[in-house]
Amino acid sequence: MGDIEKRLNKAAILKADTWGDVHAGLDGAGNGILPLNPGTPKRVVQMIEDEAAGAFEANLDVGVFGASDFGLDFDYRWDGLENILLGLLMGVDTAPASVHAGVWMHTITLANSAFGLFASYAVEKGAQVHTVPTLKVLKAIFSASGGLIKAAFSLRGSETTDATATLSSTTVPANSHIRAKFQQAVFRMNDYTLAGGGTTLGAGHIIKPKTFTLEIERKMDAEHVSGSQIILEPVENDKLAVKLTMDFPRMDATNAAYFAAWTAPTDKKADIVVTGPMAAADHPYILNIQFPHLVVEDVEYADSKIIPAKIVLRGLAADIAQTGLTGILPIGIFLTNTREASLIA
Image (tube, rainbow, N blue to C red; front, side, top):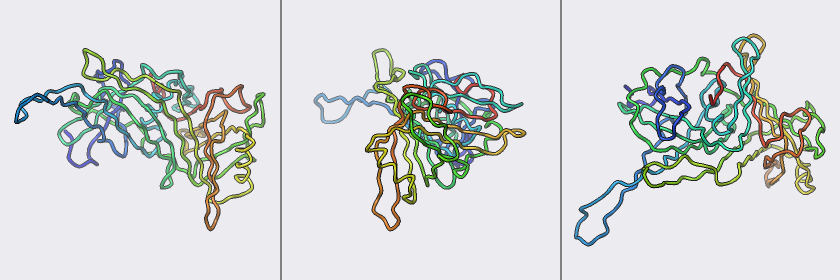
């Protein structure tokens, strides 16, 4: 049984199979997830008024259940189950490749559609366990704050219930205490080459933002139909969007050239490589985020005593593969951790 003290409660997540039905194995070893705000789901119910004549209300009916829209925020953990949310958003996590005994690399790429990919989620609230039987991932935001890499996910649930009796068997995966730090991140960017090939990102292309925001978003509907109180599994009603924003503390020769790249226009390619501690032997945790084709959307040099710089870039599909990067889709993510199973299996 849970406790009214948030610090003593648990949350769990598991990929689900049927929209609207909570996965029967949700309360299990290794399904524990560690968001900073686990108790955010809220039940939404349409109450149908009776507008006919009468001095007082005498009739109030229960209608459909509204979508349970909520967000979960994380200190990004290499082995944390927030990576399941990332996999559900992106859509493809091929069979992880063995890097070393107990260390695996996940190739997480974009599917044309995320239809059929959803999860069950539950959180203790006192003696109650509030459950979102199924949820879709609408958006992921990576950023830096307090020295850590942060991850936030926007979610759309079918409803919120008390369908799960207990989370007494729920435990978090091993090594879930290891968090990614901003000081471990290396940002590199150079010019995109329309003909393909181009200059491989290297030490000479390192840039040093003071903070960043990466947004990956699938825009989805929330529709009700006859015969059901919950929404249909959401489907996408617009194109997926990828946006990378970087803020620099000082204007310098490198970021001063972003304005010229914006006006030219000169497209870019980039990657972000976050290298953590050793997962095993000489094989570290790695989060490698690749952008084969970036278009400069905005550049700003704000008026300040020390002039800063800011650049906003939009991720697009590349016309042709770029040297040193994998694939042509707007974003590709390569995660090395200790999870052997696919994130969306």
